[in-house]
Length: 118
Image (tube, one colour):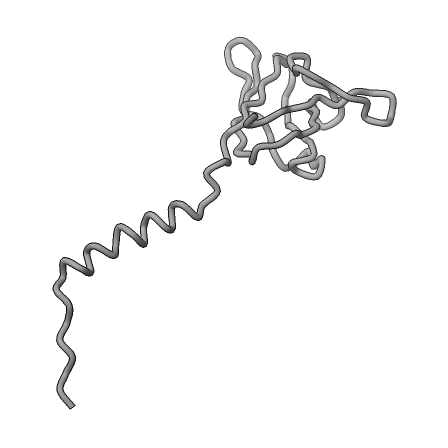
């Protein structure tokens, strides 16, 4: 049985960009960073908790403080509506004073609302 002839390399090179573009297209392009920041100059630790991390105070610590006492975190999130709060020094839960909206947390307090990617 004769050996099959190989196709010219130009065709192989043509397929590589197609495979790369298919791989890129299948990744979630809608994930973008949400930026959380809060002024807490005396804090030793600040974290953000919410529906995006199961309200876990250990999951997403903020970085800081900067010279103005501001703590910051860039967190990749899919588009959507999220409820969140800040936890200062592991004990004080506080709503975001800069949030555009909030809603009752069901315990007499308020959750901040984030409308991300809309």
